[in-house]
Length: 391
Image (tube, rainbow, N blue to C red; front, side, top):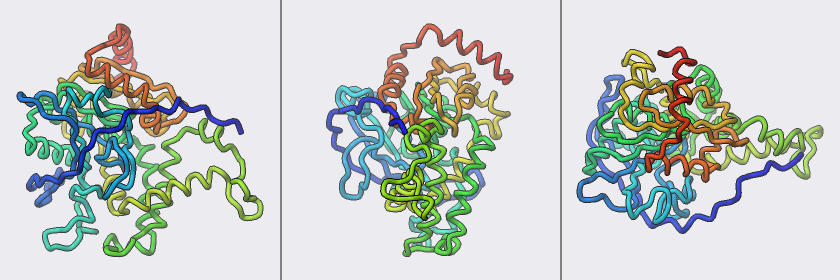
């Protein structure tokens, strides 16, 4: 099959040095009413907070990401930064101007309180870790901002599940967000998104090594997590890309009609194995169910009413080929009266384009910071306000 042309590989400057820190933020009352005690949030920072504390930027990672936005692998950090080139001197988030904060999400396994953390009795939470929502995760991040002495953020930006949290930040704390960029996300989880997650959750929980979620200190349901990641990764890429990249070709040296694998099968298995080496299955369950809980309009009179709460300068970006968070999902977010731009990331790569098409994404972020609003935005938004039927 023909090779899929990719964007020119970027050569970002070396990332500035940073290190992970963990901050106790106290007890957190969840949407469920349950209290999660002694929450700790692990985070990384770049740059310096200025005297009037007005230059802070919050960067929020996606489902299985972490606080390591830029930088090389290192001790305790098994992966390179997932947005290379975004942060540093002269970068879109210029550390000579901005103080950038990237927290690990509540419920994950990057150091912030999650299922593998010690519960009050000293043992890992495991099956006793409570259900958390995107709104709960944002409130934990707000507690971190309080501890860091940040009254408001000049910009909150995130993609995918990080985009969900960015939007929730703008709706929950309108006085604390000046600008907000929502990339490849939606105002509420759709039935289709939730449906894709159901077999992922089952794959993990039906693995014999799951033990009801209390598998520590053992390796846990590794096979189930591999399968879950294979399902998820299929939704992160477009059918067009998979067709052009793999088609129905066999994996090199193998014959599917004689028990061998297809090339696309090998590709998905590779990504499943990669995740298992660095991620906790219980955290995957917790974060997936949090994603499914996303609804910015819950208890706020619906999505349209929640979007009217936003006072930040809102930028929304969709990926032209995204089949997980479709362009139509992003258009709903862009009906917020505060929306100043609805940008389209033109790419064949599907949902993952928000990580791959860095030139387009970084330009969107730079425009949001500069306040450079294209002339056609107001007209385009007016059209969409009528077309959505939300108003």
